[in-house]
Image 1 (cartoon, helix red, strand yellow):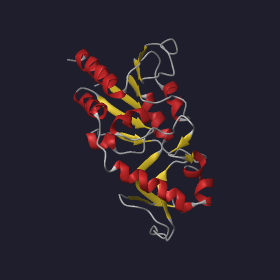
Image 2: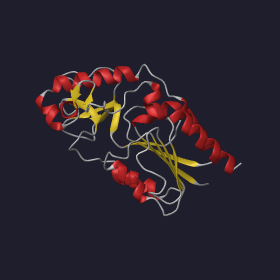
Image 3: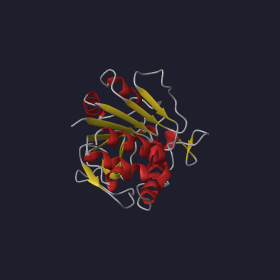
Image 4: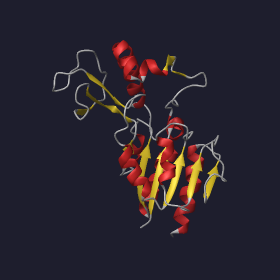
Length: 230
């Protein structure tokens, strides 16, 4: 059974109503990115950071997976599928995908500020005074700017084994995630789905660019791949 690796970014969840990473003016819901997504911002104003993620968590619980998420699940009928996502939502899991790796953390989890391995599932607000079992303040289980990406080595390992690579809804500008494409075996088919693609088909061998939103682009690629193995 061939292995498909799917790399997804903010455009994957946009049609579910999840806002993309930041607006055209560089702000994230009115905040400078470093205020709400960096250790410096956390140390400066913990209440602001917690409130920011509390609102995002509440929004996530009100949305549903979209057609793109649901169509990816169909590939598991004929392929071994691994999803590596930059997204912190759980929409891949809710749609039924069985193998999802989150590079940048998960919004519905929190962790100790002292022990990054002390992680809890969490669906309500986090407040100052909410402690882990080690009596340390809880923080969002999110990889912030300036922090290591602990799942990167696992993501590289997964990508190296791909027979087919599908990239959906990412600018290919956020590192180190953008480097994953360079770990694939040479000449495997690569599909890049994004309404405003940042790379063209001359950039890689066997690259097919589909300049469409996730729902329509994924539908086309899934139909093509399933037909090829039917």
